[in-house]
Amino acid sequence: MSQPPRPPLDLRGRLALRPAEAAETLGISERKLREMLPELPCVRHGGAVMIPVSALRDWLLDAARVEGTRVDATVAEILDDIGADDESS
Image 1 (cartoon, one colour):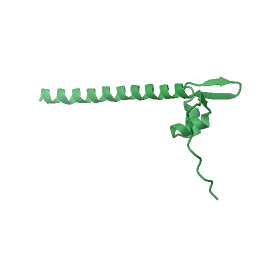
Image 2 (tube, helix red, strand yellow):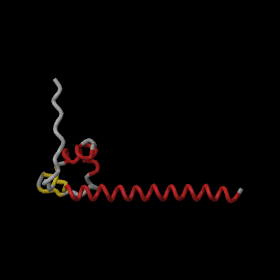
Image 3 (cartoon, one colour):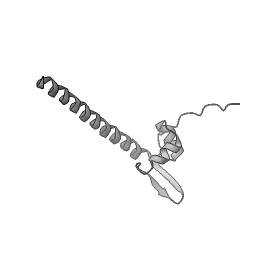
Image 4 (spheres, one colour):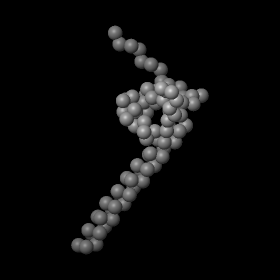
């Protein structure tokens, strides 16, 4: 028998998430999240790993901004190349 779906995590009032919860929240596997842990803001205490909710949000927004900047730079470079080709013809 399959198990009933779990209700979504309620992040209100949560200070931190365990890796499995953070992975679920991000929509990735726990294995992938653990691969990403060196990049993520986290607190290790004893054997516990805690990922602060607010720091995870900030990290994700910053990562999206950086990726957007890379995309913008690539698009600008391509447009410059296209413009340079048009001018040289």
